[in-house]
Amino acid sequence: TALANDASFFEANPAGSANMTHSELTFAHTVGFNNSHAETLSYVGQSGNWGYGSSIRAFLPEGWVGLSTLGTVIGQCTPASNPIKKLGGLGIVNFSRRFGGLSIGANLKAGFRDAQGLTHLSLGTDVGLQWVGNVAKFFSSAEPNMYVGLSATNLGFTVKLPGSPFVLCRATGEQCCKTCSGRCTGVGTCCNGEKPCCKDCDCNCPCQDCKDKGSVHATDTMLRAGFAYRPLSWFLFSVGVATR
Picture 1 (cartoon, rainbow, N blue to C red):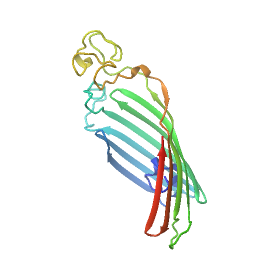
Picture 2 (tube, helix red, strand yellow):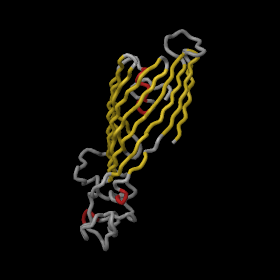
Picture 3 (cartoon, rainbow, N blue to C red):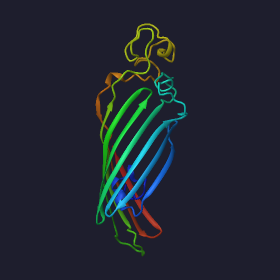
Picture 4 (tube, rainbow, N blue to C red):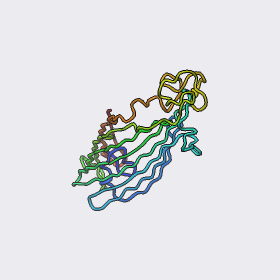
């Protein structure tokens, strides 16, 4: 949050682009938890006291190659012990402005997530402040030695998109999120082969949550504060805190 000054600043502090001294183009591949991957392409540039940038991200499950858009993998019930297959994307546009040692910036963000047929759309913004300067500096360098940053991220809302689930109970023709009488067969069969895909089924079903489709919820906002001090050329002390 305090030291954000490269193309990774998007998540830390949107004010960071104004304090960069050069343009950057980066690509990153990240392996995360729950057998997921993230591919990120980011660009940051400067014009006078202005900083700007954009970032595109794709979130993919393990073994994502070959997933059918018709839901042959995503959109079907899987055992509850298996990781839920998730696809997602995120786009970020950033602008920031420097006023002496103080920078102010904001991100505009739009993203989606599909978790086995349940699709969410999110819109939001991040805002941040960053101050850099020289305080009690005991070495010669044009580089500042004190950094302070504040940011509030994920200010926005998410919507569960309406629409029919992929999986239907063939026995009754009802959507799986409704209670089906008797035993479903075919793609509507639950993982244990006995119950239809409903909220009480011990499965990762795409229709467990459908009753709330179309509802709007606030996103989880995070507040961050960071401080970094470099009294000597070879020593840097930094600390950061975050709340939800």
